[in-house]
Image (tube, rainbow, N blue to C red; front, side, top):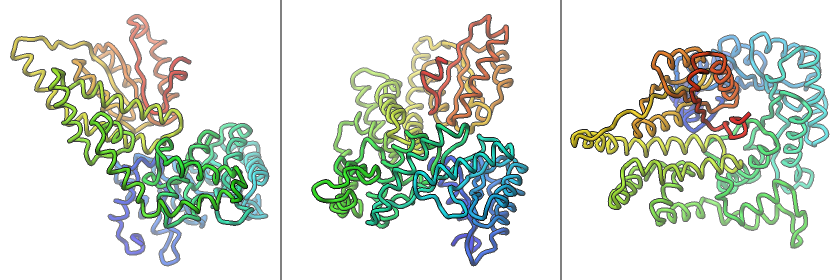
Length: 489
């Protein structure tokens, strides 16, 4: 509607909100009968390119018309993703489109769709994906890492028995693709799975959350989903979670003489309109302040974070504590819960980004008190000498820096000198800056999986360089995709 009315600034604001909400890819679709799709696509992509806070994430050029996709490829900045190509018109058009995508240096979504139609069973999904992969990789030399299979997510709980295993089929096909088609990624339109419950946002959110929990474990790399319509798996109402899980996994087909869909329908109205959620929202405000801080961090709630942080600061000050203890204690305890839930697949990346924003707001409230404490120590003739100098940078190819900036503040509050180099910093610049500043440590940050390879590269270059090897300089890494295992290896 906004594009049709040529309200491009408002459309850009929608895109900005999606990115701020944690979207990792921005899907742009101009398939509307009443607009010129090619013109609208080119206009909007050019506008996005002039907005750094939007263009920092990749664009997915989404259209059912190949002419619109090609127009988008010709003007998009950076590496794009095409959504999508398939074999629905046969192998030859599929080959031609794939060759053009490769020429433009883009990745592509490949639908599980052939001359017979969309794949709706596990067997059809893996058959079409295997056939597509053979043409793309073995015949055309298309990079496997630029292939994103979409094995089709269809609505479950429709009341039609043939639809009951749709979610399971997708999850199992995802696992098969990851095991048998090396390098390929898997994606899907998550909101499709809950379409039967449109109008009941609480149940839909629960279905999305449960479905993603199991699909990610099977190997799902990405999903098209409104970042604001995801719950925390561990926090779902137990009764609702159990019945949603029965529907998603198509289990206990006859329990108490009822199907999983019938059992979910029995309780769905209890959650309509968000009544249960509203009750829960009010309840957490009655908890002790430490628990409120954890709740706000886990759920990404900023509305009370400043007042709760201040209450915690006063409580700690009353016991003779320091402002920094609010960060090192209750706030870090809350972020540890977030980290554990994310590691277990019970929280998703957009939610972690929201949690980091809450943490950032809480830390920002405390910084003036920490600085004032330092000033008073100096006035009394005390010592706040530096404990060392650290270079901090988000590695090349990654634009995420919320977590890094929080760590930077915490380190500075603990009397470390920190040189924050920002985002997208190449290895050679990091190492040169460390030498120039005579740093004691290097800290690397990154949110996306490819950042792990860049971190490894920096570590290897430090090993090759006599300067760093002789100093045995520590390398600290952090970010959502890092792990103890990866760090050790």
